[in-house]
Length: 283
Image 1 (cartoon, rainbow, N blue to C red):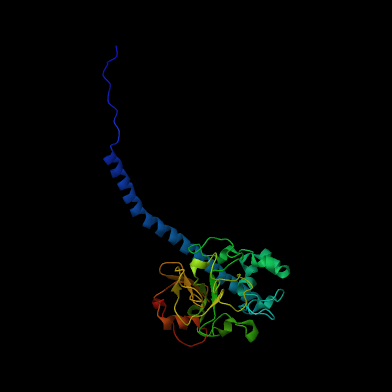
Image 2: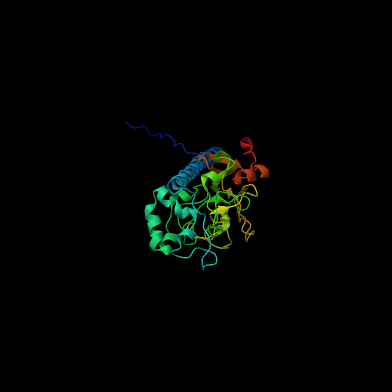
């Protein structure tokens, strides 16, 4: 025999449902910053590894040729980039490609500059800033060599006729900046304002601040505000990391340099031969 009484079904009330949703929202709010921190830590480690590879490639180039690669120049006829086939005018980012196991891209540049300009080198991208892809239809680099506070850094302009060798690093390799992250205007990475620090390809942009930066001023955070246009990011080292930039010194060591670094300390680090000590604890 079956009882005629039915057990009432239990269900969430509206208040209980709202409480559950509120608890889930609170947990997400608590967990999201932790997840973002973990993601940034992984991205920063990858970025540091990219610079480590760049430092090793610079040393391998120097071991092979007895000098560091020229940082590039304009022309001889193009006003703001290197002419096709004038490989000495190409940037350091091109010259060290064989030492980054990117011989195929390097060889492509010997025969087809247009194809070179659209060939991506993954090592040149910081994952905190952007995905590895073309931007404005060309390959990019998030790293720049140091020109010092004038022409007294590791990066040398080809047409000046001076090539930097290890013997010219008079301040010591552990006291001299080799390369670091660049400052860009993130609102215009994909489209919009083309001036000036992130508007050309990574390999043939001449003597431009796409891949060469000065150390006369401390590094600064990337710019996000689309109302700020023009050359506001030009020339500076910088990054999308929350506290500073990753940089590689001439001795191959990678350091994280704070945005709050003293201007004098950073300018001394950027120069190869000023004879001044660098306060490493102040970086």
